[in-house]
Image 1 (tube, helix red, strand yellow):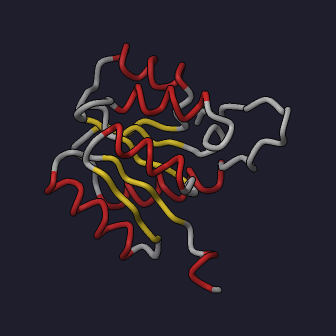
Image 2 (cartoon, one colour; image 1 turned 60 degrees about the vertical axis):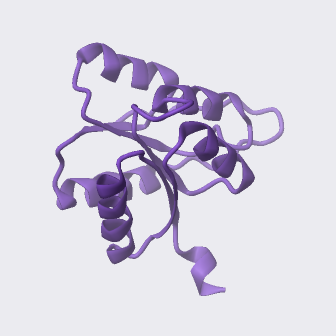
Length: 142
């Protein structure tokens, strides 16, 4: 099936306007998308059907983006999924936290459509294969 070869990007963003923008821009760029506005529901959806890459906001209800990322990297089913943290938070400590937790990239809001598309394309190029039963996860940093 041709659609199965189209990368699927999962977006976790609680701001409706930004979520709509992300979904629209990524679909125009040729990606399939799935999304949630709540961190806990996002994590559940990611575990059910691991995407090719994730875009996570930091500030979300129930679980924030850092918590979702921590859970993803601890789970062998989702540890290999590259993650772009997309947030209005620009503090150096937030960037360090994202990297320490295993984020592949970090992009601050506001962002341009070109930046978003370039970063998502780079996530997909950096994607590691799913880990074998006992292999370790290599976090890829840009």
